Length: 408
Ligand SMILES: Cc1cc2nc3c(=O)[nH]c(=O)nc-3n(C[C@H](O)[C@H](O)[C@H](O)COP(=O)(O)OP(=O)(O)OC[C@H]3O[C@@H](n4cnc5c(N)ncnc54)[C@H](O)[C@@H]3O)c2cc1C
Image 1 (spheres, rainbow, N blue to C red):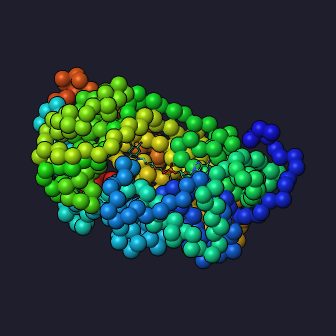
Image 2 (cartoon, rainbow, N blue to C red):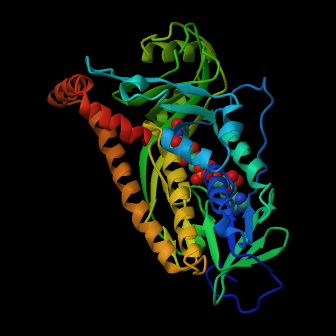
Image 3 (spheres, rainbow, N blue to C red):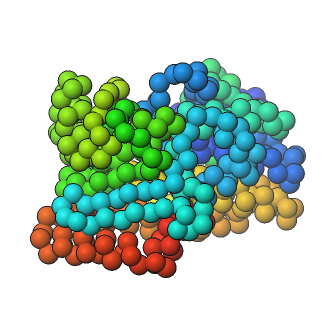
């Protein structure tokens, strides 16, 4: 039977009010924000994930997948009751950002002090944030963890959804939340179409050791082929790099012997932190932008990468997803407080209205930004560089942009 066809027979299913597919950073935050609120104490919530997250050993090498978490996302994590647990993990609170153009003299420096903040955001390994959130989530009395368990299929019922796991167990719920990442099965099963834009680039990621301290600064150099970011880790001499490159160039650099790769990387970064003394394993991810045409349908909502994935140049990907999680949880709690069922259409349409436009704006902005910095036209280059210098001295405008970027 196709995933889209209505189920004709209903096997004995365990009933829930909400099924969340995906306990990544976004799905687990959403489920926590919902279930920790007293208004949701009567909800039965199932959370499914194929992978069981766990904290790495204290001396384990840094993982390749790290995220720059904005202050707004940090506030949501604190609201979910995970602030102290996250603060106890290895992470880097960065206080400054240095952005410069490889093709001229344009430079912008952001400092937390300029907006009266202690830091601009924090750099944390994805697996650490996910494990901290899940540890708290599995303690919620209304949550049933199906983890590690894989989804087999999703079928529409007359009212709600039937969710079949790979081992044959069947669940049902009026509301399914798709937090299952960029290749979302929930999105496909609900028939929510998605537009895709291929940048024909790859993001090359690697942990590197540098001669000089990163000074708690996130560094980004705009090269004609794409940006190169050095993101500071908990060890002052280690950074996680994200280097955006045309696909063939990323593959060439990925295959180089370590010493040659370190030398090319050092040159591309203008040796801002001295010599690159060691490089870890390298991986390269194809860069695609995807945006679901709709985030919701009766009984379904998408959050995080299931709804959108964007260019990593602004380090905003997961932050948009965490904001989706906050808004959707708030809207569901609002209908519950009004005495309405959790799958009420009002909550879903209000969620979609608030988040889709916001995310679309940011996605278009990122594409425009990427093109502006890739432009080789000399007039544009001069404009871009003088614009950066003017912006750096712009006082209030710069403060406003900083506040918008950190979400405070
Ligand atoms: C090179 C690169 C660099 C990036 N850098 C940054 C950055 O600096 N800052 C930033 O904000 N973002 C960054 N991002 C984006 C960020 O990693 C993603 O936005 C984020 O991981 C999305 O989180 P999510 O929880 O929505 O999805 P995911 O992390 O994909 O989680 C989905 C979860 O669903 C589970 N799942 C999926 N399918 C099934 C199934 N069938 N059955 C059971 N479970 C299932 C998975 O196991 C997983 O746990 C970067 C991305 C790339 C490619």
